[in-house]
Image (cartoon, rainbow, N blue to C red; front, side):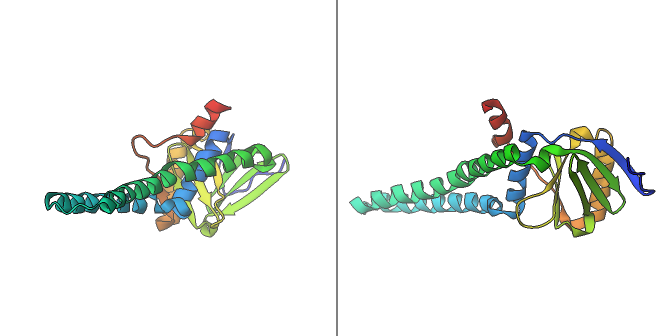
Length: 205
């Protein structure tokens, strides 16, 4: 066993589950990937629907509705709604399926068993795994209810650390990361009714 470095702050045993991996992957996509456009798509859909309703009411009251107007009305309601469904369900489902496949076929994530925290970095280790990641080289650090996600680049991958395995140290790490990473830190927020794709896949397993 290697001697501990003098600047070691904390060492914990961790286990990254399939649910962690799927939800973590989705949050990275929601922050730096294509899913970051979801709020804009939803806002655009609302604007289009409001203007569509206003337009149709005006021509209906004026008695100027033509047969093609009904077709246009249906298109202006259906297409934006379909786009929202794609961003809220179809794209997350696609990323979830891919993440599940990556988790089940990739050996690195499953073999990570330990994390060591230092002042300027952290280390992930396990059978055949030895990763050193410096906070200064991370482009983002995301935090959700279950994970700390350290994002090294825009590939969509991240270093995942389950908060439940950190115990009381999770609160201290939160404070340290916010101070160390500044504007690169982001707290991921959920909203009522958002589907937990990771839990859904666990149930279906």
